Figure (tube, rainbow, N blue to C red):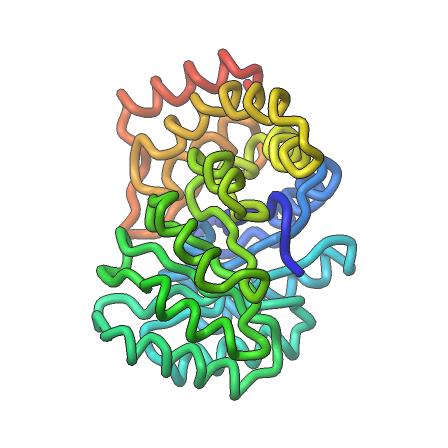
Length: 290
């Protein structure tokens, strides 16, 4: 259902408020350059510091701007199951095509708790759901066995796998077969993950290089491994540079360098340090983005 290059889009701010005009322009930039889906209110979209009203508004604005041209998968995860249900209910009402739900963070639930959390959301909201496993941010790793249990739930259709392990992707695919679409949650591992059966990526890098990210995924899907490898190696300096500091600090700095957003962040995220910003600018210039 959800495949290809899907962008984990930033939330642009100006003077402390969501810059809806800039968000609309970013969405047009993505669609014009071949991106297969827009994912608002994820980690890259600074969901942790959006108010509930802002979160709902960003999802609504995204759906309105996309106009059914590509998929919209709204970030609706929370470490409170009731809150995740409420956010997912709003995403469905707003017209999103699906919802992306990060594993509950800080609580450190057991595998049974993860299973029950996702099952409760799936039963409460009839919307295609994408699991999101990123233990580096949440302090819990959802095991392939738990993913396999969840693949039996009708409207749990995919997982964004960000544990950084191609082995874990292989185990998920072996355990779930066609019941679960795997999407890379790590830009630099997209091509290796696709080699073992992933169907695409929810990507940070597409914020600044959407055409090349889409082309890499499409090339592999078409069986053109040589072109996919060429694009992977072309993109690799960006994959590295966009994580010089905590995401989304570098990607917002990069978009600001490109003149697409103001670059404003919300505390506790802080502006990029001078030395890493200069390194990022060099990579951007060498790539031809600025």
